[in-house]
Image 1 (cartoon, rainbow, N blue to C red):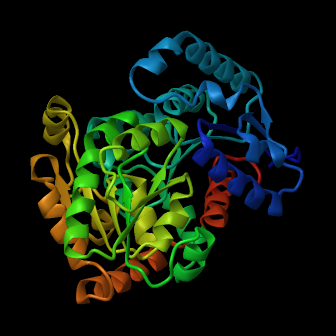
Image 2: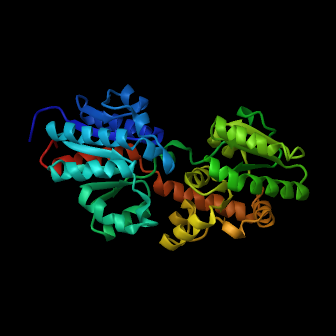
Image 3: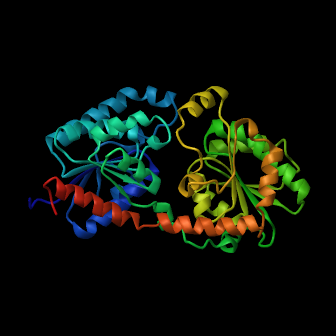
Length: 386
């Protein structure tokens, strides 16, 4: 056992990781107030005293082409971090998400005898399952946000702790629809459908028109309906405004960001698959999940996919709670019919809210505290602090 202050290496690549990292640092500081944190940190982690050796923005790259442009800088940064941590070994290294970057660091550090934790499982359980071999070599311990992910690692003999999802801790079990509506200046008694066609240019290009056509059909059936649409960023706002020019008759209010609030204010949500479906579920919103990709991407991914569902509510329930309308099946007629069936206090909507509340309770685990306890157990196991 050593008496030096706990030294912890952390690397995050984007805002969601920075939020998780900050929660973990705050929880670790409760039992180790003098602990030293360093690596790659965002503003929330830096505010808690984590020293960032490189800017987080270098890692925040999306898509296929952008990372290639930045590859030399990313490789230099990874090499620099490995050299730094091998020269001054931390008690543990924690890679938060960013698996393409972090697993390479974890592999080298674990070989050098430094315990490694990876926080947030890559979707290895869903596709490219062969990656589990590299993960097993790179990671001393995996922390997962969702229970079925932990089951997958246990099956593959990788030490794992399910810590729960931070969104489940942050969002109340009972959403406040009226408060959300008054904050957004929306009428209290009117039925409202939220449209979330995704945050990427390609998603909005493939789904935007379909979602607006669906809204038009819903309006024919229920002329009192209103629609709300959160634009993820200024570029998406421009793209959506351009599309809406063709739909002058539609009562759609576009908001900049605020997707949580917009969904909370709605009665039902039409959304692209992704984390948004988990957020809508935690907000207890009946929803319809739809997704389209280019035919080639679809052909490749559908062959590699190892799970029966694409949306997190269904994966968590292990059965179809919410309809998934994908690729060629995604027509405005079908989506409109499913949305209207879930409006108001229909039997379907009431049952869904009860199912969603059960799952919310299952993944609400005080994740920051649980993650901190797991990290300290890894350190103790490898001969560091208790």
